[in-house]
Length: 245
Image (cartoon, rainbow, N blue to C red; front, top):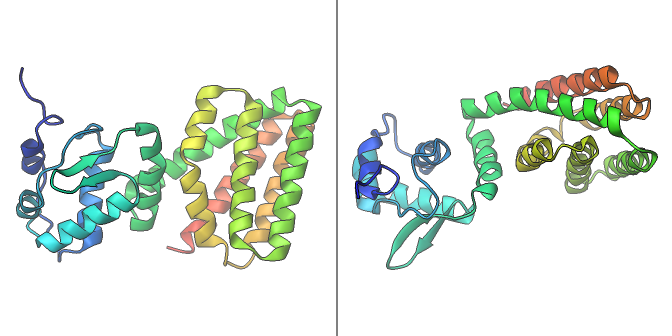
């Protein structure tokens, strides 16, 4: 049987290019993550040995070792002593981890995902406005109240959790399983957003106001209004994120 680049660890070494600027663990991790996210390596594949990766990237083995350790902690790869490093099974969990790393590392792909998310959230809000039942509105009101309490208490973790729960509940109300799964898969992006911008002045009050406008439009069964309110929220949230870069 003819091997493919995904099946043969040695082929990955040939795909990699040397790191041009000064080597760092972060730069090596970014390069490996690019190939993982691009699908050049499938789950279960054994990565090339540290020595081969170091030679392909033109970096010290210590940088490769540090990058692999970081990806192992994130759950993207599994280091098996005496055997090597393997891409973990379970691709459904890979996307949020990759997005999380991408945002922290400033990858262009993350900004592309932010743009796509703006439209997905708008569709989610539009469908929710069309399909929301009284009990759905009640849950949204409860989540909005929880977000307000978390903001008043000043707890970043509680505020982040409430914000994520709010967006995922809208996706649930929308009643589209594919859309819900996609938005659920980028929950890590939501979390990193709020962690980065939560200390900015006006973030909490702005988020509460923007969420309130979305709830009001869904309550009124106004799809166009819900879409506009969510688009406004996504635009302002992205502006806040850009202020932290």
